[in-house]
Image 1 (cartoon, rainbow, N blue to C red):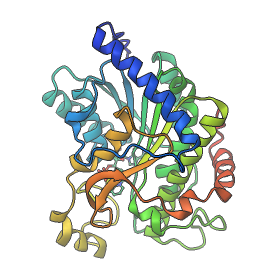
Image 2: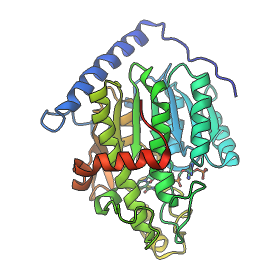
Image 3: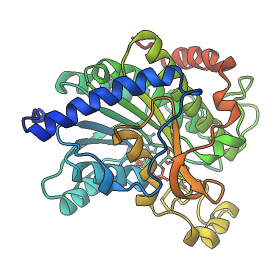
Image 4: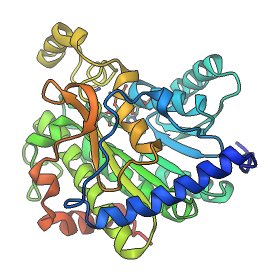
Length: 346
Ligand SMILES: NC(=O)c1ccc[n+]([C@@H]2O[C@H](COP(=O)([O-])OP(=O)(O)OC[C@H]3O[C@@H](n4cnc5c(N)ncnc54)[C@H](OP(=O)(O)O)[C@@H]3O)[C@@H](O)[C@H]2O)c1
């Protein structure tokens, strides 16, 4: 698949947007150093894709963009003019996603790339390094939830930890040189309300001794949230110049349950009763789209819906679980992730 370089912004509006992005990026990065103390701009509660700044000239990679929120991210971003790369496991579903996006947005610039295990993460990063001038936004969205039986990735790691967290740790580290070439590089990582109930079980991180499907999912979502905060801290300290922002959709109707615990499970049956109350995938994508595009989105922050115990409703800052904000074991998680993936950030 060949890359046609993103068109340089020539119009006065695009130059202005670029300058505004740089200004916001600089102030947002400086802001994260004192993020806890400084007042932060609340998102407009009814923020929608209509508020999204033009994404012309921006290059975005969305993991897991073949269904659910990732698909909606890709659709909205191509509609706003971004060049989008969808990376997921299943090439057939990839082709369908691309066809659907092109039908909705005939001028869409969208491609599919295969992503599954750590070797495919390395291969993808190598291909992108070879052909992209930079990467503006990486959306770490791919996930599986609560498969009833403990699965193991090709690399030998518990499947949810591998897919939802370790793969994204590796992908982000390997793409950091490309993200650093952007004047407003962003990493947006998907967590979940489930992270609020999780613990990082360093004694049995891979659930080898005891596998509880939902505890393993929650742990993976806590890990990615904690790492997202740590990534911002490390970027500020090392001058990588990126914004790392976490988001969650509340509860949204997607394929996550059907492809995880299954619609016949107790979880699935409960879900079926309640599903009319929840967000559509397009509504669930808004916190991510805000984090990835809004000029005022804050590095180190966590966005999500603010109603009904954060399950749905207007956009705002999400409640940060104490276990995610606690930095006492952040370095331990980072070092372990480096060891398990073999990826070091530079
Ligand atoms: N839905 C909710 O209520 C909810 C709540 C909280 C958080 N979230 C989070 O939102 C994000 C999106 O989930 P969703 O609800 O939209 O689920 P979804 O419809 O099941 O989409 C998940 C995506 O992840 C991809 N994927 C799975 N394993 C992969 C792997 N090993 N490598 C690459 N791609 C892989 C799938 O692609 P394939 O086509 O390759 O299978 C699919 O595109 C996830 O991070 C999830 O944890 C969802």
